[in-house]
Length: 190
Image (cartoon, rainbow, N blue to C red; front, side, top):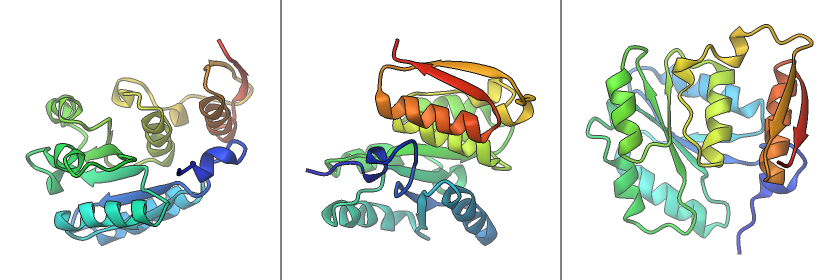
């Protein structure tokens, strides 16, 4: 069976595949996201039409390297039904869905979580924010980062963080992200 390439390599997202359906009127946003994710080894591809998503997911799975994440601009999924529609095609490795919203769309964000979106991230996209959502989505956790100041905004020099996580891959991922943000991080299994 399929084994996560990126999970096998020490503390890295190398080779993780993400698919995007972004705002049609902001072509530069897709490129910016590709560059931001690429810095951590995430391979980002975009589709221009909602109708292309299912075929892209099925074909990637058939090639043995499924997409682990689908990043969708809220304006491209007005009814928020995309995660449920994709669930119906019966992928062996269903991706996590991340919704990109406007800053003041709290009601939409809460509704999206009920419709199968694992996390939401607000515009303008900040790299640390996106990467925290990617990491938590891989662990199938919901985080409301809009209620926190993001890790980017907290002075990190010399700050120590203890990570308690029983999954080895998740532990390495958390340490990697915290170290990149300038924290001194230790991890324990429980």
